[in-house]
Figure 1 (cartoon, rainbow, N blue to C red):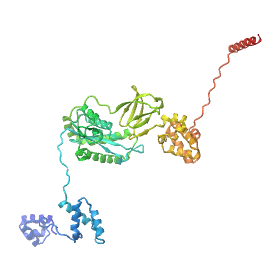
Figure 2: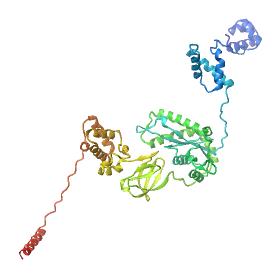
Figure 3: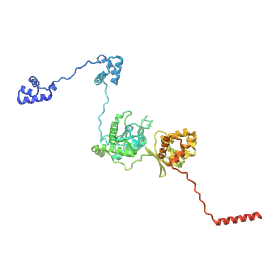
Figure 4: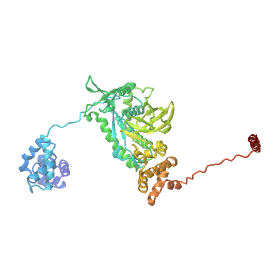
Length: 498
């Protein structure tokens, strides 16, 4: 086989000397071969004929029409499905090693006879005009807070011209998380876009106008964007490709986070705040490569308003006789001292703040869904006084702070009848509220490992809690009081004699 380099050397030598024989020899080929290439004026690559013939017999030639019909009826059929069908129809005729041959045949059919495919349509992006916003689930990254899996979303925003992006931790696709995500992005960027585009989530398009019989933007959502002079826009239903920039950015952000987590060497964080700092650092580094286009965006965008809207809603609540308030379908326990009081609550995306007038009196961790969110510290005094209420308590499952407390209660049920076990457990829970849940949990773990019977007194002794003795105050005797007593006694005796 003559190589292209040999042909090149032949041409150079022949142009220099004009001798076919010497040029051929110096190029590593015979005079006949060299004469052929010089005569034709083409190299080996140009003279090589394309390989269009089969080197082996086509094992599917006899069933080609059947394969074509199957693909014509259902183009989405996978080659493996067709291959398995042929093996069932013609036992022993096709071996597993021939699957790759069928895959090539199917691919060739689709390129020649397949139906039209949906292609991406190139878009013109105008600086400063459009910001897209979406939520993306981050649970697959297996991020943990103090060893516990941190289930969360990111409210992710991107400018479509420069691909500048920002994200905030979120726990649901709520209006509060949208407000926080959007405001965080624009105040980080330092300017306001013309349009904010979202999908058709209920956060933005929940209400339906009867006159239009179509989804319209929520009043709160429209009012919120009007404050910033931003036009709301949503994509068509079931058309996520219309939000292509943010959908693509979601995937890029997750892959980038994965790489930085690998570099960090750990997916565990000591707090949500530490994780937020890590996330911000990843976003800042990504945006550093977009500075030139970001300048163009900023030149075309409006300035931020002076007032940043609060990222919470306020409600007035009266604490019920159960010591609870109901917020967004969830009943939350509050300190029992607030029973019957009227309080103001600020509902954030991740927490609920309690106020009495202007005084902050507590913060509750917000829960999603419906049901109860009870802190045993709020109700333990009432349960100690009414231990019979524990057995049928609606939120009984939330009165076990951890698996250790649940295991301790199960062992108490084995030792005593139910009422006695309930009283003992409630006293242990009271000790946890007063002396620290972690401390009592550690003691219970050690006691359970010893596999010996125990009571509340056992835990109390291990906590070194001594029962205080009452203090007696003895007043110093007064002789003057004694004289008065004698005087009164003489008077009584005189009265009795007379």
